[in-house]
Image (cartoon, rainbow, N blue to C red; front, side, top):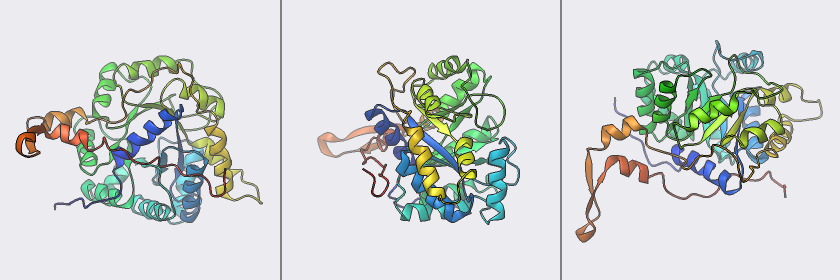
Length: 346
């Protein structure tokens, strides 16, 4: 079956590109908070997504619930269980959340983070349909956990790119130089560096070898590099923002929601915590390992298309342009800063 992408107001890769570009214009690292879709309920998640944006999020990771989140620690595992118990059971339910949040004013990029095998199961291996529906629902990219190296990850990268979605590459501790090089070559926007081995969960400090690990990744790419796993304070956000291009915060924020007072709403708690974390994003003039561009055509896609030429222009302006150049050009379009302030905020 063939799926045709219709004209959409969003272009996921371009949206993520612009999110990093605007953060750099403000002299900040990008803040990327995480919440599990459907936690505590689907309606709560919609309010939480908006609060994240109003608090200063540049990009948001939305977790896709599944019944075996084997890479996650107890905080996130509990979120998956509760979300599924309350009716959010996979990508399609998360897409409903994204569409409703978009209709209420959510404008920042959304990355769906989940387990690849469950993506395949829900869509009966039809990942073209999954990406088509995601693109049409306002999603900007995927971060697939547990995807197999080689053919599987390359094919999924191609499908995502076809639908203007960014497939985020995940670098785990101990990755070889060749593995990092391969991941960098597949990147279309940013690369996510896991700071420590083990499962997700808030920690009190950053690992001592983080600088060296980020430096290794930076030597392989000029695209943005972000760090996640364990970040739990504005100081840690500040330290990471001055070591790369952005910080991902997940378990800490969920812990804050779990400790909500009886007179607080989930939206208020999330807004306050994201705004607090955002206070740490300011970068020094000598911030290390910074990106020099914010999006790119994945190398394997570039190679596959560089010999296919199309004619553009007319008359004396007619010239030949590689498909890969055409793909690159379609993301170099300026768009307004996607972030909106909290209603009533100064």
